[in-house]
Image (cartoon, rainbow, N blue to C red):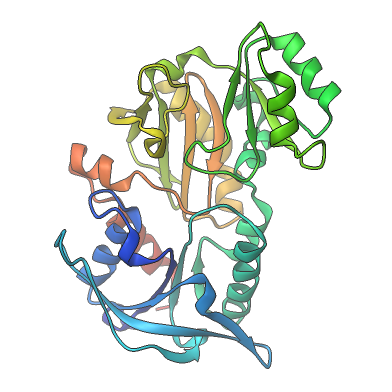
Length: 319
């Protein structure tokens, strides 16, 4: 398989609606195109199964370095996904039934030899909030429950607590409950849907004022710079989607220790592009669905993270 002949599909949110200045998927498209690879665009709804084969209603895609016109799409044609060499699964959470069904469909393409990034089995296994809990030595005290008494007891013990859903992104649904416990009942009731849905409670990490740092791993290797997402005044969420400010910083010795703890399992699961969220000395999440922050780090550090990923993809493919 020649490098110039690679056919790369991308499953993503509508490309017309992305933020040109900071979209990570766009950086991946540019990097693939720079290698002479052909791009094919799909949204989640374009995937379908026919007689046991995965198909897609796909369109030729060109990506441009132009804030007024960053893409051009061809006419849609329905073709087997097995005609592609690589599929980048870049649909943003929530990880709902639509997302999981799309991942299952991509699994059919994987079985025909398509490289899906990240692998479908890992996407199905690795809830971003719960995956980190496999490394308790890296995490603050945490409980996951839908029981109000259990969640209230956790707050009574730790007093300063973050409550959040297991399937959100961008800081949505995150509540900080301080020692006095104001509104704790309403927060637990709302997030847990009156005890029907598991939610996460974590001891509050005051170092959030210095930022929630995204650390990117490409094929198990860390990018040496993270992006500290510093909350706006009065906010407890550093997420850029919640108004946080992104400041690149060099990784610390503690960061490298945390990375050492998780990389064996990340490699074992074949995860090629992963984002660790680190606050202070602790991992709070391991993002596997659609990690971001590439553009901000590249802009501030002159790195080419998407290029590193494309090189890793090339190494994974049969020659």
